[in-house]
Image (cartoon, rainbow, N blue to C red; front, side, top):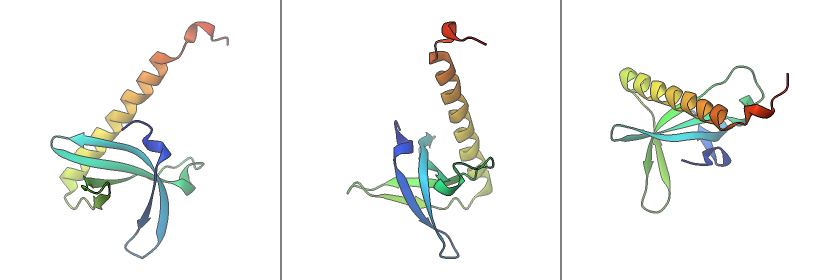
Length: 103
């Protein structure tokens, strides 16, 4: 999803705490879509918390986020997200004009 970081989602945790999150990515693994979120309060922190949920797009332009209960599924989704971030970092580096770089 392009420009996903421009969107925010309010999560309600099990303890009823609400956290405003930025959307990092919406990505597909096999036939399942996932969403990766980062709390806005953690954006300036050195330590990042990333929430990954199953993402279901509804017909009325709404979305449903579902917890990933299966540990193996979570590991697969998390690994796919990390690979996506690595690919985005590489793409950003390769698109930079390093010829004008001065140390």
